[in-house]
Every structure is written in C-alpha cells, then in structure tokens.
Length: 564
Ligand SMILES: Cc1cc2nc3c(=O)[nH]c(=O)nc-3n(C[C@H](O)[C@H](O)[C@H](O)COP(=O)(O)OP(=O)(O)OC[C@H]3O[C@@H](n4cnc5c(N)ncnc54)[C@H](O)[C@@H]3O)c2cc1C
Image 1: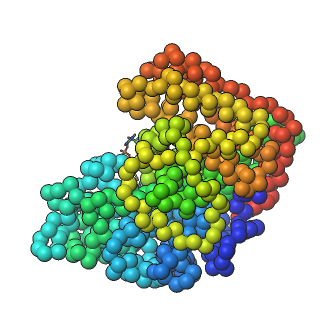
Image 2: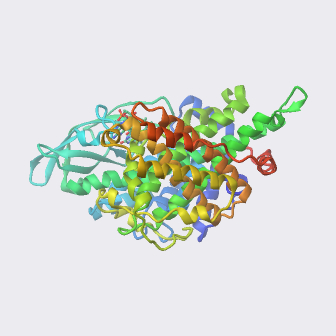
Image 3: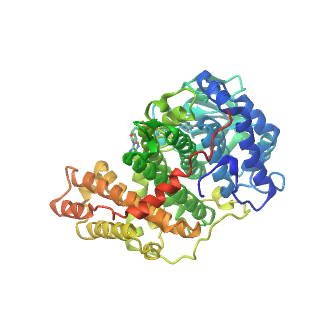
C-alpha cells in the first residue's frame, strides 16, 4: 500500500540511518501517545520534548546537513525528507512546522558563500539547534519587493540592522534567524544571520495561539559585521526565492500526513458505528465519500513523490521542478482540504471530539494552502509555464524513481530565479497514452478541448491581465499537470488500473467544475464559453471497479490506531 502506516513502516532506504530516523521518530510519537499529544495541543505547550528527542537522536543533524558538512550519514536527501515531513504531519502540524521553518532558515545559509557560517550551522545542528526564516513583514505580505528591514553601513564592514518581521516561526528559540532586508538607500537585498538571544533582538510576541511560536520581532540597531552576512544583491534575492522553492514542496507532505491519519481515524469510527441497523460504511454516500477521499489522497502522494523525482534530478538545463513544485504546494494542499471535508462529512460530530487527532486535522489542513505563497500566488506562477507546456516541447532523458542516497546539491545552487517562461517540458502525451482506461480517456478529451481553447479562442491581452480570469484558466491547467504526474508515478508504483481509473473519475469531475467556473467569468467570450461547455463531462460509470476500490478502502478499518 502506498499510504503511510506507522505501525507497519515499510519504506525502503539505501542506508540504515535513514530507516532509523523514521523508526525512532514514529516511536517517539507512539510512546508519547495520543492522550498526551492532544493535551499538549490543547494547552499550547512548546514542544520541548520533541526538540529534546531531535537533539538526543541528532535527527536534524542527519536530515538537514548537506553532505560534506556533517558526518557520513548526513545529506540533504529529498527522498527521505519527504517521508520525514509526512510522519511529522501525521502526528501533528506543530511538529512539522518547527522542522519546516528550520528547513527554510537553513536555505539561505547552505546557499551562501559564507563558509564560516555554514560550519557554524553544521555545529549548531549537531547541538540540536532549530532555525528560522525571517522574510515576511507585517505590512507587506506576499510583496517581498517592499521589504523594509534595513542594513545601514556604520563603518568598514560594519552595519546596524533595523526593522520588524512578522509571522516568523521558531524566532523565539532559533540559533540563527536568517533575516532578509535591504541595504540602506539602495534596492540591493541582503540576507544576514541574527540571533534571538542578542539584546537588540526584540521578541515582541507570539502571533498565533498554538504550540508553535510564530514571532513578531524587531531589530533595533542590531550590530552586524561582514561575518554575519549570508548574501547580497541578486544572490540574496535568489536565496529567498530558491529557499521557498525547496520549502514550499514540504507543505504537500504535511497535508498528506494529516489526511492519512485522519483517514484511519475516520474509517475506524465509521466502520464500527451502527445506525438504523446498518454500519455507517454501508450508506452509499458514505462509500462514495470514502472512495473519493482515498483516491484523492493516493493521487496527492503520487504527485508529491513524482515531483520529488524531478526536484532531485534538476539541473541548470532541467528546471521542470519549478512547475511541479508549486503544483504540489497549491494542488496537493487544496486536495488535502477536500479530503478532510469528505471525511468530516462522514464522521460528523466525532470530528469535534477533543480526544481525536481529527480535531487538529480539521483545523490545521486549512493552513497549508496559505503558507509560503497563497494558492493565488502559486497559480500566478504556474500559468507562466503554460505556453511552453502545451506548445513547445523538449526532449529529456526519462527521470527515474529517485530513492538513491544522493545529496541534492543542485537545490542549494539553483542559480537565478528568473527565466521561467523559457523552461521547456517534455510532451505529456505518452504518459496519457500509456493508459487506456475510460476515465483517463475522458480526461484527455477534456484537456484536448482546453488546449484548443488556448490555441483558437486564445485569452486576450485584457483577459491575461485579469488575475481573476487567469486563476480560472490556471485551475484547469493545474489539473492537467497533476494528472500527468499521477500517471507517470502510477506506473512506477504499480498502482492497480482500478485505482487509476477511480482517481481519474475525480479528475474528470474536477475539470468539469473548473470549466463551469471559467464559463461564468465576466470576460469569458462566447467562443470560450462554448469550449467550457464541451469540457463538462460525466465520468465513466463502472460499478464493479468502484466496488473493488471501495473494498480496498474498507480494508483499512483497523489497520492503524495511535497508541493511547
Ligand atoms: C502560521 C504562519 C506561519 C508563517 N511562518 C512564516 C515564517 O516562518 N517566515 C516567513 O517569512 N513568513 C511566514 N509566514 C508568512 C506567510 O508566508 C505569508 O502569510 C504569506 O507569504 C502570504 O502573505 P499574507 O498572508 O500576508 O497575504 P497577503 O500578501 O496580504 O495577500 C493578500 C491576498 O492577495 C493575494 N496576492 C498577493 N500577491 C499576489 C500575487 N502576486 N498574485 C496573485 N494574488 C496575490 C493573496 O493570494 C491573498 O489572497 C507565516 C504565516 C503564518 C500564518
């Protein structure tokens, strides 16, 4: 089975240490138990026990130190990072978050040319430190061009930093807060290392009401020397965007972990509950909701795994990951919301109970589409790739499943964060042609009409400037890229054709839904509306296939339950 079951940990790793990291992390949470997990969540306790475990077992040192800076088992290996993030999400987004913002905080450090700071970071990781990424500012949100944190020269190689940052995770305890700013009087960006323990680092407050510390902090003439500078100018700007490229991908894995745990809880509950003399799982609509949730969750995982292959195989000549990553970020996380909605409709009141993991899932799943670039920001990015994706293909060597023990060097050497419109993609047609299934074929017909819309009823210059219209177009395009990644990985993971067709049953309905949305936009022309109507299709009905997939979902009842 492709879904995580911590009680039957089965993922293959090329080395013993990777398996040990996953096994010990699972053990930590299972030993902690659900009651304490929930108590800590309700009391909003800082997760010192988890960080103590991370330190004792050198977990972040292994997972977050690139090869060459730590012991031989340490490397930045996206294959194992994916599962680690999934496990943390499975037990609670708060644990994932302190890890995630450490990933982000380390990004500008590992991308820097400041070797001394890299050595320091490696030593701090060995000591069990956490890190923080100080990009966002209260007044500017997604608009990082308007950053106001300022570094003012006060002598040769000496500066003071002044300004405020907002929504910065771990900034209460981080050993280094990688802080983004501008050099005074210029438009030159800069990344520098700050430390919360310094007297001129003012920790104003925790902005959120949770176990996490998401800080507002101010620097007041905080002294900085060249030794604290990570990068300047274009390098600093690239480090900001390239760090987010790496980090945003993990949000998909948090969603997958959350949904997987919620699915186990939901099926355990519903399959044991009798109403009107029948099991809740005997209701036809409940079967449908579970089957949809399961198919969508499996698709989320296939897509995120496949995107990781492209990320690990990326190079200056192959930057396709820059499309697949925001698709994971935006689509996997919004699919996660849909999965939780479906499950919650089944378990209803049970989802509110304080002893359930589900209560946290229902709250936390909402965060993931909104962090590190909202859905809109990511669709705006994704549509830049659309012309080349459809109309200018390139040949690439096939990207295999990347579960090897490599250090992902390129992620810290991604180069300039521009030229997105020049990136070319392989033809997705062979991925679709490799499956002759009713719903895959229907989906192909829908997306052929979409392609025809782009070619013959091409959005006008005004429509392309209207972000609301662009969002509606982008949603359909995302479905296509998502479906391509599903199919590429369905083969690699030997998914049953039943399940592939069931996933495409969902995707056919999704394209229909987005076609209706595009149809209704104020500026959609009559010709475009005609294409939209042609994209609305009913999935192929096959009751035998549906029942077989449902049986697979139902068999999950009792497969996992967290230790009390
Ligand atoms: C719990 C939490 C933890 C966080 N942790 C960190 C952290 O550790 N470090 C850090 O630096 N930041 C962090 N953030 C900030 C987070 O990355 C921002 O919330 C995010 O960048 C979006 O900013 P905003 O929410 O202020 O939205 P705004 O920027 O105010 O956006 C408002 C609206 O405009 C839309 N919009 C904005 N720009 C565009 C665009 N170009 N195209 C289309 N639509 C657009 C948005 O989609 C949104 O609907 C955190 C936030 C939260 C809530």
